[in-house]
Image (tube, rainbow, N blue to C red; front, side, top):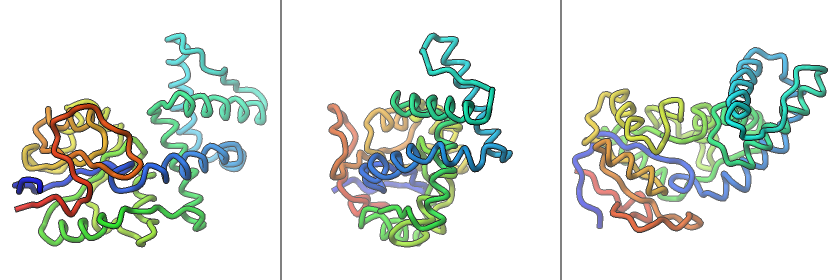
Length: 247
């Protein structure tokens, strides 16, 4: 049993914490990857897409400067431009990059799938009861994920249990800061108006928990089916949110 905590805010990771890793890697990522070309062909001239592509081009410029050897981007004929963008996106995915431009583009592609009913996000069975229980006791609930805020909101609005966004107060992505940086967690606590030592962060990744603990947050390592084994660590482990006891 985990210790009883004096907690006023709970910060949650998504992948491997509220949602199976398999949904992200076997459903969401392939869905976006196979639809990049069609999405760009349809929405290339839309303002939000242009803004997104400007971000990707800036990331590409940095990749070239640091000799990362990304595929070239062109600004020529429409089809050639789309081809080069698709190649660069595929390269970013293969590199497993936490690219803000890529995350934004993936979020917009997923939006189409959520809205037409193709995508529905699974939640672990203990997640919804815990969210409801925490909210009833006045706990503030926030999400911190490497996926864009849009992608987070879409996921929780289209779960197999229905729309659960009414139970979540705030969403944070890596525009707040890296998930391995303590300052990111300090910024989140400040944004929520809570002292860091009155927040609990739950994740399936030890290094993220290390950063949160360095910022003053309490932590729990979430051990779910399909999660990657974590190195030796000192964070209390939970298998379900039901094991988190709050005073």
